[in-house]
Length: 115
Image (cartoon, rainbow, N blue to C red; front, side, top):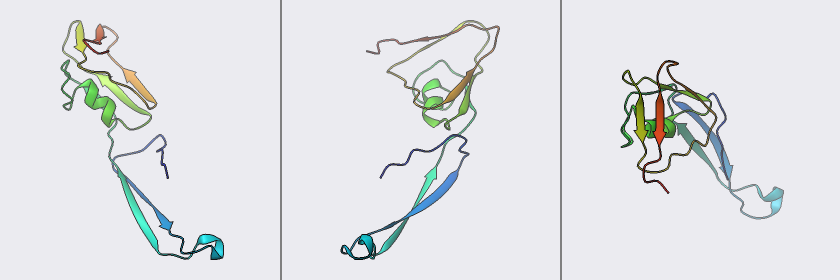
């Protein structure tokens, strides 16, 4: 079983589903016990980038990408002047996201020693 959450999740989103086991082939294989699974999705949007460091802490790009709700927004709010974020390893954005930053500031993302 695979679940892929949709866009517009809020924090926290809690939902669940029931799974029924099969005891035999009668009644289409239904007839065993039922188990309920609750899933809690913890994501935050918007995410605000306040640091150029890359240790995965709150306020950093890596943290923002990992904890962003699908369809959420990442906003850069870095100190004045050109800024460079040097990544320690690859950061993959695998969900819909809006990325915004100040129009009058240069922000570069450097892959560092990432393969």
